[in-house]
Image 1 (spheres, rainbow, N blue to C red):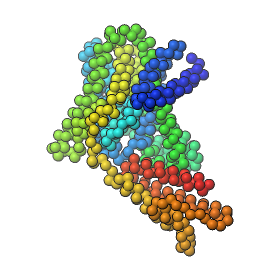
Image 2: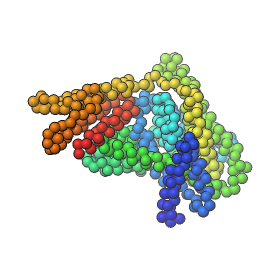
Image 3: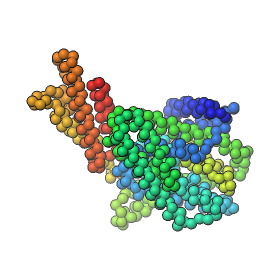
Image 4: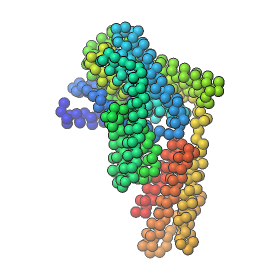
Length: 527
């Protein structure tokens, strides 16, 4: 297939994505499920060339921006507060699931080497960030559960990928050292944090010197790939580097972005992430044809692979239930004995967390990257695809229903110290102070009574200016200069409250968005 035909196929895929999303919304279906099924159906259209997925390209193309998007909007304070729970899911659950799958695979296929069994477990163990985001956008969860699931989706890929690489190396070389692997794992994570923090710091310094909105948005877009590629080139975790860079950029974007850049960048980023997420699920469906072409006769899957595949899929699902409920029981026991103050999730919340283990593009890409010499490679590919289908089509589509039935309670300790209304009043007070400083001329005469009234009682009434057109233009310019100063004061107060831990990220983003719109309107009116 020549390059032009490939480009035409990509455009056709995005047109199909738009159509499938529209149909999914009209039928109240999860878009991820519709895209996988639709992509699978499109793959078998007569005359359509087979889609060959390069696993390395899939990881470097899709994973960094989608991880960056999740990290950018991650609430730092809850993320830090629930770090123990996040690591339990992102590392503990991944390792435990890998071990369970490895044992089950060894029992089902005694001839399969242990290293290959571990490789299969590492492929299937990490829930996917893209799949988690696609489902979480359609459901409403208590803040603590959302934080745990989002944090898990950001970090668990690193654990799964490191396990996979060690297992594959053990298959190829026949040697494996648990101590060396553990030390290398922590070294890769620490290195990824350093690289990501450095990239994020460079981004902050760069944006303080750029005065062009387009260049600032372009530089922000390139951060995710720069962090991932730099991490991989330095042989540390590219995933952790992207997450760290995203957290850094998300923390500082409130003070380095202007209102114009923030509004435009958010709109651009939302469209980009939508297309990338949709393309991921469509490619999963399209890859079905290539998988069947490789395996050969579909009857072979049913006759020789059905039983082990179904048992391993069940092991993946059950392992998550076992880990989460066991970990929650340990937390409850330690709380009762006074060792820790953390609250357990409770049965209903643990049930929801256990069911929210969707797999996606990382599982598929890593499975496709298996070397040709890997024992039972075809079985591993079929199992990976089956796990993706079951978790996305079954768990993903029923998660909303389960949440509504379970009604997990909000953790009272997760509520912000200062609520939205209190933060809004603090912002208004800062704005009013700025108006009072600028609403009087040098002789102490009030020259902007409407502004003072507006920021005192939030009224919108205006008053016409008298005089010549030139005087009117000058007065209007001064009028909107005061508005811009008030917006800047309100934003500075919001950032101060956020840095002091008095409001959470969601409150900051909501109120800052209102200020951005107000500033853009003032700038446009003044101009």
